[in-house]
Length: 98
Image (cartoon, rainbow, N blue to C red; front, side, top):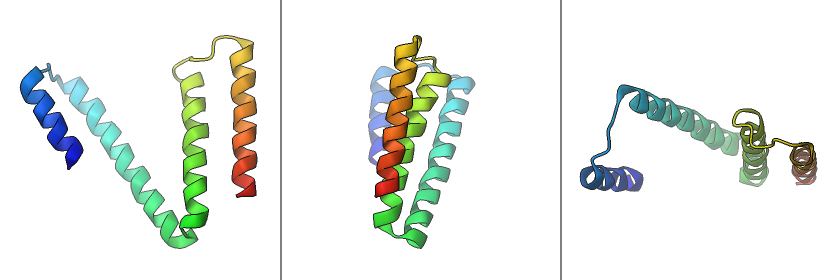
């Protein structure tokens, strides 16, 4: 509710252009967020918070980093790719130990 009120206030003062493409991208993003949130709550119900919370947080970090590299090409040289690979291995190791 707070995000909606904030967005409404900003919309009223800034009056941004709202095309159907922008609305569609926002709607799809919100729909994916709802699906992820629903899955996270269900996993916490079945596995417990102490197991599901580290898995959820760690996978968000690893998948977000990989998405940044492959979808948005944020790693343009070999050093960045190797660093992201090492970060992913370390994140998986931490998830395995927790």
